[in-house]
Length: 97
Image 1 (cartoon, one colour):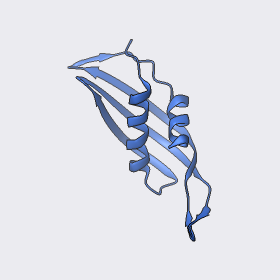
Image 2 (spheres, one colour; image 1 turned 90 degrees about the vertical axis):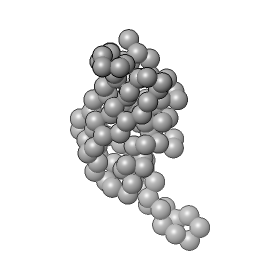
Image 3 (cartoon, rainbow, N blue to C red; image 1 turned 30 degrees about the vertical axis):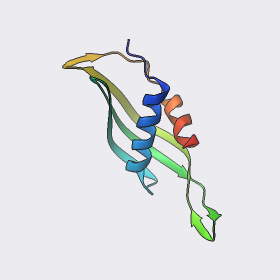
Image 4 (cartoon, one colour; image 1 turned 45 degrees about the vertical axis):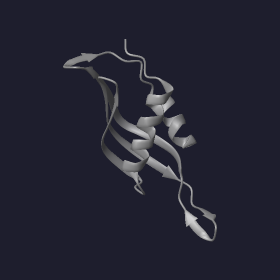
């Protein structure tokens, strides 16, 4: 079983937030590498935001991400390996970003 570390969660979260941009619905793929291991998240998500004023401008930070469907596939070389990925952990990382 491949362990998804906090640094991998952080990298996936950062890439996902960039991919989501200002959308309220997201469907796509983000990929990150941990040495020779590839972690590929395929997801369809509903993104909740809360408008707030910062410095005279209205911003809409992500306050929640609800998965409609997701799959995190890890491969080492050409071999697919099981992992201990938790969407809840990713969600908590995103909301903290």
